[in-house]
Every structure is written in C-alpha cells, then in structure tokens.
Length: 115
Length: 111
View 1 (tube, rainbow over the protein chains, first blue to last red):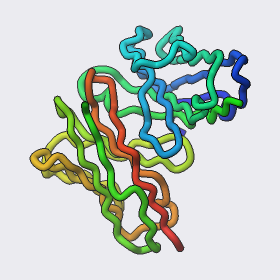
View 2 (tube, rainbow over the protein chains, first blue to last red):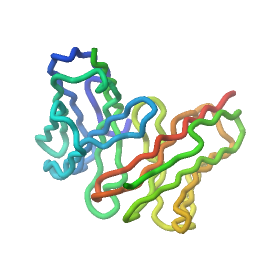
View 3 (cartoon, chains in turn red, cyan):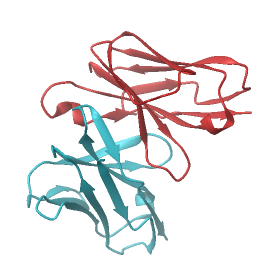
View 4 (cartoon, chains in turn green, cyan):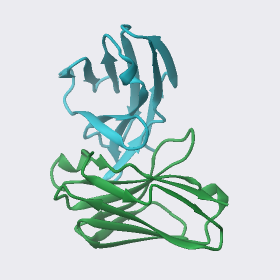
C-alpha cells in the first residue's frame, strides 16, 4: 500500500459512455498526477495538479477531462473514448517543493478497456 | 527532446544471480534520476540519485549515477523470484514536475 488509492481497478466502457476515474491520496501531498501506461510504451504524463491548480497538460485530447477539487482527490472524466485509449491509468502524488516532488507515489491503477 | 533509454528491455535469470540494469538519459536541465519497481500495477519508489558517484543501497539493491557519462545502473545481488518486475527509471524534464520515464526492463527471476 502506497497511500494512494484508485477506483475502479478495472473498467470496460463503450465509445459513447461517460465514466470517471477516481484517485485519493492519504499522504498529505499537494501535487497529483495522471499517467497513461500502454503496452510496451513508457509511462506518459497526462496532467499535473499542484495545490489544486492544473500546471501541466501534455497535449491530452479533450475527451479526457481532469478535476482536482482538493489536494487529496483527483478525477479523470472520460467521454467518447477510442479503443486506442485502452491502457492502465495511474495516479500519483508527491510533495511539492525542492526535490521532494520528484519522489512520486503511485496508486494501483485503473485498467481501462474501451470497446 | 528529453529522453530516457533503458537496457536490456528484458532479462531472464535464475535465483542467486546478480543483475545490472542500465539507464541512460539526455535531459536539458538534469535534476535527479529515479528508479521504480513495478510488479503488477503501482510503480513503487526505489531510489533517487542526484550526485555522481555516490551509491545508494537498500538491501540487495544498489544504484549509482554517472553524471559525466549520463547514465545510471541498478544492481540486484542474490536475486530472488520476488524481484521479478519491471524496473523503471525516470528523470524530471521540462517543468519541475514532469517525469520522463524509460520503457523499463522486464526482469524475470526463475527458481
């Protein structure tokens, strides 16, 4: 257990569905991240939130919409996804400031399949 | 563009063997290099290296950074089946909070 939880752990959705992924961290961190991990590809950073403010958006398509209501919770809202969006979505958190925010703690991920 | 390259991509060894995993990087403004272990889902943090030549050690795992040659190695001695995992290295790139990851090394330790 890393102190970062994600729900659901598995999700199958059709291309016309709308769903949300949830992440919660219990570490008192103030930066949170969404990553995408596809088969045989490096982890790709999608979004970064620092103190609830989005600071990075790595050219992610608008069908992915993040929301960070507070420093402990992070959501990824999904709509009209494509089959190539099927992947493991990982949430991470870290402490901001100095070098601490490079040590990121990851949740178990949500395995998403788009049919 | 910042880049992290890991080798080998996969490795199969027997219990008791010693393995060395490699990570080379090219980043505009180097800050640190991190190693993670990913077994099933969540990558778990192993080491963060900032200074060249100083070995970080945790049990049978150790890692060292060479900032001149732009690489790091992760050593695992007396491997066990529980060491089977994907080992990822990453470095902050671009803005301070972006981590660029390598593709990982899939290590399989056979009994």
